[in-house]
Length: 224
Image (cartoon, rainbow, N blue to C red; front, side, top):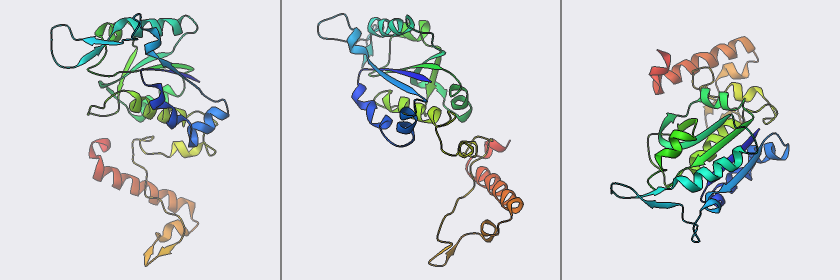
């Protein structure tokens, strides 16, 4: 998979891709990540990428020209399966979306800033708009990193145990059941006996029941 990320702050994004699972995925060449500074496509000597909003109002708006030039430059070199804009008013990111995106070959992600991007970018270049929550951040870089993490960990070969991702919360429309590790007892706090029993059938049953119980308490709408 290849992921191209368009941003005005590429340095903000590099750290999440230099550690842990994502770092191993890049090292294994299972995914390639490229950062593109939108300022490099500005047509003025100050590399300006934002301007005042037509019609007035507070906040600056990212200009259409540098973003369009950056996108068009990349599209000349390859076809993109999705061009994604990270925005608070996009479709809320869920596991099904990440599952689908993990099967694609080429993804472009645009990180917004300020009051947003010129609507002409969204209307003419973006194929999917994604939000990581009903709140506003300073920019799209952190949401882009979150999206990439949810996608990359699902690519075959990234996790040492590929069945691990299949048992994550939301994969089967349930939250994950409680998990425990050593020691079996800590200051009188014990691991449930069934998990120590070695009885796979009973363990699966216990986990399923606990997953339903947990989901019902925290996200009852998921059980409807």
